[in-house]
Image (cartoon, rainbow, N blue to C red; front, side, top):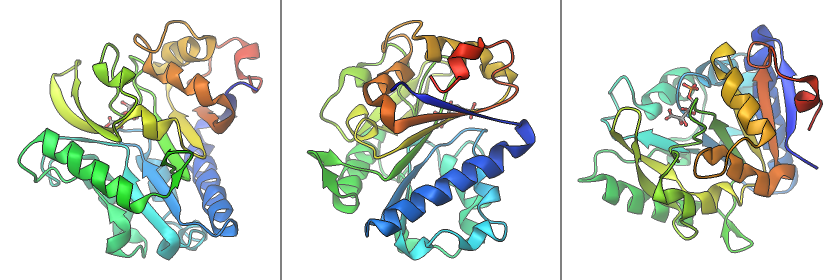
Length: 251
Ligand code: 6PG
């Protein structure tokens, strides 16, 4: 089975994805494991995180049984406007009762990105159960960059062939800024992955992703085809306009 695609009306996108996250948390609970959730950054997920703070969704997740991580972070102070942690804090953490010790930001206060990646690798090793030889997140949320990147794994990066690291230093070639990102080993071992694609600006890259137009080096999201049965794309109606129907009939 290929990667499945769920299309939601734009106005229903945030609540629809929030409900899927809640379902994944219930699956973890019924399996008696912590809900280890890696959040994506950028502009798309803020409305989803806010949807999780509004009743009745705000009490649907057992936050005491939840461990929250970031899939990637820009190497800036927490208070910086481009910080993913700052966005997650503003849209989610401030409004739900998750114990602070259950939240694991990438520590950008350390001396270097390399120290940040090493520190985050150790945190993942300590906090995320190992299954099949690697840490297994119950759920990883990923945005889809217009260049096909996921987390902060960008086209042409040496990180794309790194099979051992848990977290890596990355440079965004679009603006030459530094980041820390979870690595392929972690992404490809997740129990479930949701790829969040919203807006007409993502039409082209979504089509390339779903048709396999490229390779992992030119379109890093294609690595997800290795675990297609664990991946669901949630796209809004604007992102799928002009997309051939066969691509979204739950490919
Ligand atoms: C980040 C994200 C990144 C993002 C994509 C899509 O730190 O920017 O983690 O991987 O998910 O770039 O970003 P948008 O949601 O802003 O389109």
